[in-house]
Image (cartoon, rainbow, N blue to C red):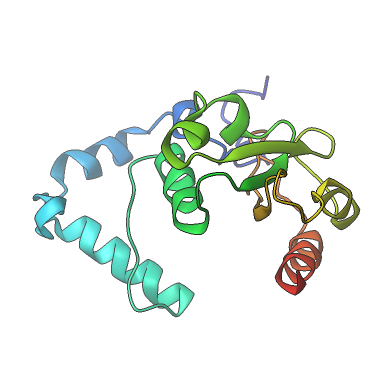
Length: 167
């Protein structure tokens, strides 16, 4: 428990369910200009998407209302039914998304590593042999920030990404 009036040194970004908006934030939300984002008429969402696209150097960006939806769309876009997705053993996609990847994308989820973090070696040892009766690994899913609020080390992301792209 932190002493009254002192700010915590930790900023918890793991979920919107653990935050409590202050009065100023509530006021901003209540007075925000809104519209129908489905038709591109919500200026706040439109500005957010444009800002994200600029930050990432992309043509466009898409705002999604939940991390679960983002995870499921990413898996669907990068896989075909019968393929395999590797991810950290304690990952949200595996433990808290009701089997969505299997249901929506028809993929096999294979947990690797300890809890959420894993290494290039974990990825390499989890790859299936290239035979017709084994699912072929198509995607390595890294959750960042992890469910604990901790970040997956950048150097590990780069190493895993380079290894996966070479395959």
